[in-house]
Amino acid sequence: MHMARRGRRVLTVVALAALVAAAVAVGREAQRRKHLADETASDIRSQLDNLDPATRAMVRAELASDVVGRGRDKS
Image (spheres, helix red, strand yellow):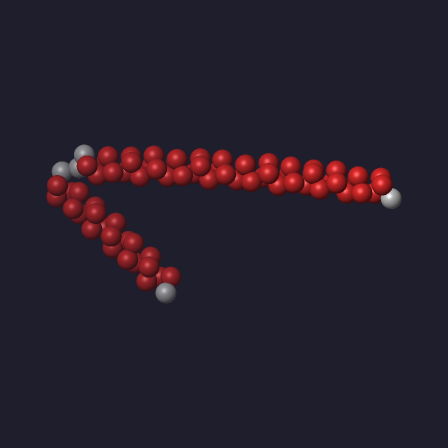
């Protein structure tokens, strides 16, 4: 009886350790993806800022219409 309890405790500790390890891995992956998204957005902003005003306005209008179009497609 005592050994069965001990076995369950060991399994519980191992399961909890596995859950913690999985949570840490998910957190790190989320951080990595956020960092990549932030870098990409910064790069896009930089490229837009380097365009001449007329081209920049045209690109922003096109991007805005794409966003609106995607919103309508989901409805």
